[in-house]
Each structure stands twice: as structure tokens, then as C-alpha cells.
Image (cartoon, rainbow, N blue to C red; front, side, top):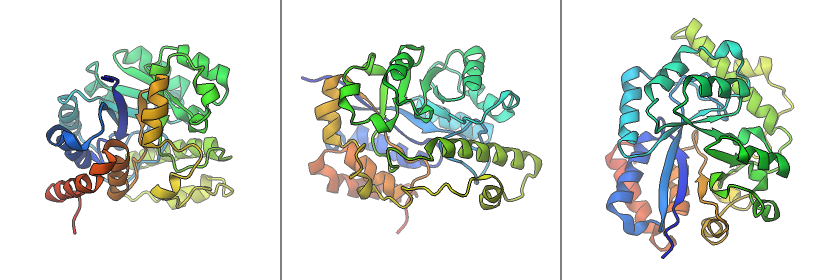
Length: 319
């Protein structure tokens, strides 16, 4: 019997917290629906407003208070599941390291279970020095495309290295990688593999996150309009080539990883870490992702009905 755990990292523990708790309950109470060997390795994201956040600009909504943070940590950590903070802002500088909110989150979650994803060398060094109990993941935002550089990254003291999804199906490179157990793959990206704006956009997102956090400190209660900020700071030549790509269109992209690929190609090669993106996605989008990746094909219709039924009972969706 194959005992390999296929480990999924899912979004996220604030916006999609109820959805993910329903998922965990279904996995516990209705295991017959789910693929063999799957394990939820982490829920990733941030507690808003987190200046160190990267990858997606997270704005709006209420500021998470200490009691909410403690409750969320206990809820997921008591199930043995880490929260993994997406502190991947590439625009972080020395003056941002003493951010009160992010440091408070790090102290509250500093129990040896929770994890952090990093990009900025300045922030990584700060976290390693001040919060040594955290397992650290190297972010895909680094855009490491060179084989030798990726080899060196995997040799460093990282718990996980998220492989750039442009390499997802470059099996001639993947089969030679060291420490395959440390490699994590983003399976459902809707971006084009060779986007010329991707690194620039990550930096833009980071600047927006900092601007938002500084705004709410200086002007509590006053609306922060991203569009106004973007008009002043963003290169207007950035037009996302993948804008509007839906779940089914994304499956046709060259770097898409299907469930069959995971079990028939990647796992036999020694890889077992996979990330589903969707921090800012809709509930319906994530329902389809979870059905596609986590549920047996023959059980999807029934599992989808039960999932949506339980989501309705928990007030996540309304008809």
C-alpha cells in the first residue's frame, strides 16, 4: 500500500476560514469522498492589515484584533495544522521591520507549529534572528528560473522552496532537483508562464500593501482607494495578460498541474507538496478547486452538494 502523504497548502485562514473549517469537517466525517493520502499541510495568508504581506494586496475589512488572532490560531493549530504567513513583500526595507502589527502576530503565533513564507532578505534575516521557532518557506515570488540557482536554494535552510510555476512541467529539470521533499508546486495558477510583468507586479503589490497599512495608521476610518494610489504609482503599461482567466481556462495552460499529474507523475518522482492559489478568489472558485484536487472524480457531484449544503448551514453561502 502506498503510504505517501500528498500535502496541500490551501488559502486562507481569514477570508476563507469558515469554508476551510467545513472542508476539514467533511474530510473527517466523510473520508470516502476524498482521494487517498491527502493531508492539509497548512492554510496560508495573513491577518489584515499586514504590511509584510505580499503576492496579493490585502486591503479593506476590519483590522484583526488580538482575540480574533488567538481564536484563529487555536482553531487551526488545535487540529495540528499550521498557519503559514505570506510575508513575501519585496518592497520591505529596514524601516518596516518594526511594524507593530506584524510583530504582534509573530509573537502570538510563535509556538513552533506555525510557519512563514519570505522573499525579502532583510525581512528573512530579521525573522530568523527574532523568531527562530518558525519554519521558513522560500517564496515563488523570487522567480528562480535557473536550474543551478534553484539547486542552491534547495540546499539552504528552508523548510520548503516554492518552485516557480514556469518550471512546473519542465521534467528534465525537475527530475534532477535535490531535496524533492522540500519542493512545493503551485498547481492552479491562472497566470501565463512567461509574463513579462510578473516581478514588477509583485513589487507594485508590495508597495500598495505598505501604502495601505500606512494610510490606516494615519487616517483611521478613512477609505483607502486603491485606484487613486495606483494612478500615481503604477506603471500604466502593466496590463495583466491573464486577466479574466477562469478556473476551466486555467486548466489549458502549459504549467497547469492536474490531479492525475500529481498522483501519476509528481508523487512517483518524490514530490509531495502542492499549493492551491485563491486567497482573493470567490467561494465558488475554491469549491471547484477543492472538488477537482481533493475529491475522487466519481464522488465530485455528491461531495459538491454536501459541501455547499454545509456551507449554507454555516452561513458561508446563501441562495
